[in-house]
Amino acid sequence: GENVEQHPSTLSVQEGDSAVIKCTYSDSASNYFPWYKQELGKRPQLIIDIRSNVGEKKDQRIAVTLNKTAKHFSLHITETQPEDSAVYFCAASPSGGSNYKLTFGKGTLLTVNP
Amino acid sequence: NAGVMQNPRHLVRRRGQEARLRCSPMKGHSHVYWYRQLPEEGLKFMVYLQKENIIDESGMPKERFSAEFPKEGPSILRIQQVVRGDSAAYFCASSRDRVAEAFFGQGTRLTVV
Image 1 (spheres, chains in turn purple, orange):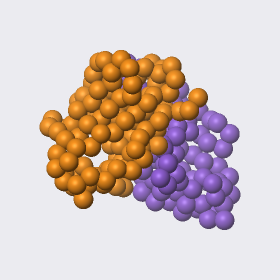
Image 2: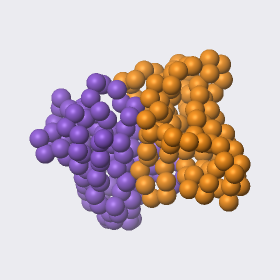
Image 3: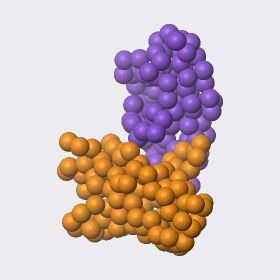
């Protein structure tokens, strides 16, 4: 089955700096890669996703890049703010367009210091 | 739209008891998924259901765990004879179809004492 590795496990940045979280996956057939943000005690919320037919996607301060050859994808947050502090999970989903069988990384605890 | 509703939010069970977790999908969503999150771990897929059908239960433990999504009412994840290792957060998600974005509920935190 799919295996998703996520690094780093913790990340501390100063407000205004950029944060980068990296994930690798094992199944070359995976083609859907969402990122979720989970605040303490709350539900995971989708913040951005990318499918394998594109290499990069941006949404305001958040961007995701995908390298299918190397089987890795990254989340980039620019101009970080204290409210960006949360646990971020990457995930990968098998081919066929179905996104239900997500395999998640173990998460990155991002702390943005004011 | 109230979003995906899970109840209870917190559930404490003694070893050997049964736990029943409920999930009401978002309005218009007929696809439901259950995930389990152990402490400091990512979510692990358990089961995918549509109304009255189990589509994929490849992530469900072989014993003590079962899930249903009846024609009327919420989806239920049932854990019989709970053990300490079942302590985790159980999240339900729903989507309009199998390729649409899945929205998560707030989870049920099960503690087995």
